[in-house]
Amino acid sequence: MGFHIAAIGHGKGRAAIETSLPFAYTTAVFGWLLSAGVYIAAKWIIPEMPPWALCFWRLALACVILLPIVRQHYPSMIALLRDRPLELLVVGVLGLTVCQGLIYVGLEFTNATTAGIIMALAPMITMVLAHFLLAEKMGFRQAAGAAISMFGMIVIVARGDLPGLLRLEVNAGELLIVGSAVAWALYTVLLRRLKFGIERLPLLVLLLGMGAVGAAPLYLWEIFSGQRTAMDTTGLLALAYVAGPGGAFMYYLYNRSVDTLGASRAGMMLYLQTAFVAILAYIFLGERLQGFDIVGGAFIVAGLLTAMLPARHKPTPAAS
Image 1 (cartoon, rainbow, N blue to C red):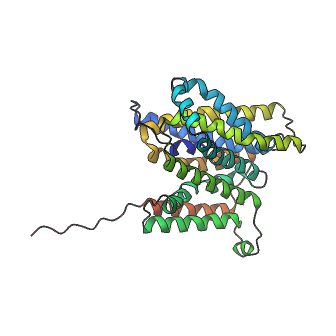
Image 2: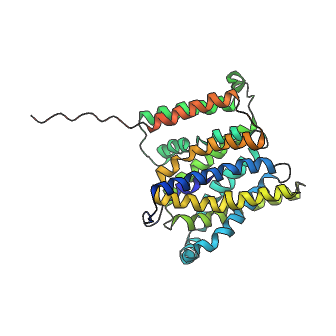
Image 3: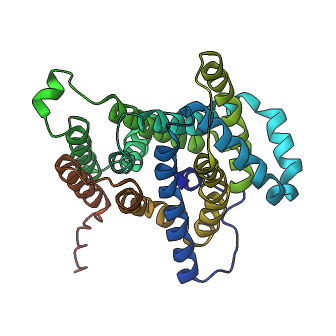
């Protein structure tokens, strides 16, 4: 869930932060480990806290925790909020409220391991949408990789029963996670198109706040429909984790790694999150990889590798 930062560019170019590459990679790996823990905590807290309540409190608390860190950017943040509030609201709701909320709802019907594998599709979906909506180039290898990865997603959603998919016998949870991946992709494309023009972390804080605003009506709907939060100590610790270490601190760490590695290299490390989710789900939730997870995940990885293959350059003829 830390991939939101990779989509946000600097308004004035890359920041010049002198950080060693080993430290930057370590920071990125630790950030994805913390992000993977959110899936486990969210699954753990389901019996005690409705999904939109979790979404609201995670976004609101992460925003509050990060606000003091970006205090030197308050003037530019206020100016952007005054000039483009509707755009910030749309992007924040799409990328943070809808994306995260659908994951939490989906986890009521599917396991954390499967959710983590499906979310690995998000960068591939982004590439496809950017081709159609932003006219970004997509070569044959990228198109083939997208098709292979999409087939892997179909295998997982159908739970290995492709004829069952034709009979519409699918798991609602996996479909919701796919919807979350699509929401993230649209969010990323919108960020590239709108170019808000301020630094990455203060923009994220604004979007977290807007995401909390978007989640508030759904949170209130849960309350009025009788879905109340009733957490014990374990639930409170899980909420503290998703807002703090798995929220604000994870965003901050990953922001630092992107400044040093660049968005592309740091963003590609998203796939570590899938592995971390599977490991943590096995340790803390007792989940096992299902056959369809392995087959579908293999197709997704194969598609990603295909898309990342460098294009062959035809040798230039020697001058006579």
